[in-house]
Every structure is written in C-alpha cells, then in structure tokens.
Image 1: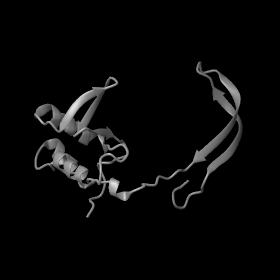
Image 2 (image 1 turned 90 degrees about the vertical axis):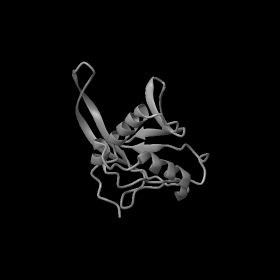
Image 3 (image 1 turned 90 degrees about the horizontal axis):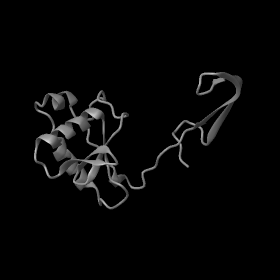
Image 4 (image 1 turned 180 degrees about the horizontal axis):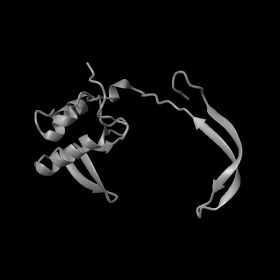
Length: 145
C-alpha cells in the first residue's frame, strides 16, 4: 500500500484511556477511548488518464464576461484521454463551476451538456460523463503557469 511522503505506513493507534462519553439522549457514561489513524495514498495506474483544466477565472465565469469556454475545455480534456472505456470517467469541479455549468445547460440547447436526475438527485453530464462536486477544489488557487 502506498502512503504520503514523510508519513508513517500502516495504522497508528493511540490509547486515550478512560473518558466521558454521551449517548444519543445526552446521558454521560464512562468509556474506553482509542484513536486510530490511517494515512493512505493513491496511485494512478496510467497518468494519461488524468487531465486537469486549470486557471479558470471564477469571477469572470459568474459575471458572464470574458469567461473561459469551460465546455470547450472539457471536450478538449476528454479528447486527450486515450480511451473513455478505461475505468469510470468523471469530471470534478467546485460548486461554483458546477453551478455555472448547470445554468449553461438550462439556458442553451446543447446536446453535449445535459442535466438529468439519478436516484432522486440532479446529475449534470457532458457527453455522458458525470460532473461531480468536490469541495476540496478551491477557487483561490494560484495561477498555474
């Protein structure tokens, strides 16, 4: 198993001894407490199957003025992949970009960008590839040069 550089491999355990805990009704009871921590890494099997669209000016995107053509960039990103049949393909965006894509899908008649529903939840897709929200993608990143 891989793990982040500079960290310890495997599961770390810390015995915290006895302490106060609370049940679902808020009643206090004594409990034995332990802390378990696992730092796991991720390995991409083939780097050619990862594409990043960087330097999206979110303020222009929201204002609608001189905004990047995100749909065009997404199509270019899909075409950089060797195959769409290797694994499960998906786009990950922050909430602002996903909101703007949803608005574009509602406003224009675009056969590539669609908004539907799956299991009672809204699902936006570009050419059949789902667009998912990740709160870890920040709008405040430095520009990539």
